[in-house]
Image (cartoon, rainbow, N blue to C red; front, side):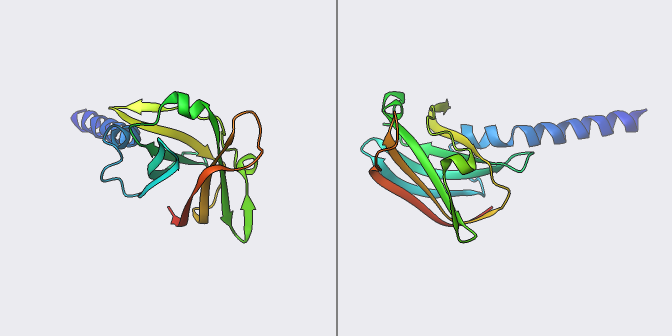
Length: 154
């Protein structure tokens, strides 16, 4: 009986540690997370991506976390659409191909601001991932700067 109880406690601790992993890193500003990359590039003034992190979902999807600078507000986010495209396997996959939400909202954890979105891709390697802004109502042209991240493996 004691052995069963000990096994249950150990198993419960193991599951709770796995479940709090992502939240732990988000609360701590993605510090010491091993699938993070420093970016520190502005799309426009006061809309900067400081870091990008990749979290594996239980499905084949990948969760992308963009850590934003402190000056980014929801009003700025609401003024633009955030597009994304991927280049891999010698082809481009655009926002609609990868199921990217172009109208994100800021999520705040422990004073860290994030955009969290899921990419509908099964591969774990990308030649490049590009973020860009465009008009909120429809695509006319890219506004501001593109942020390009190359050679991604997770």
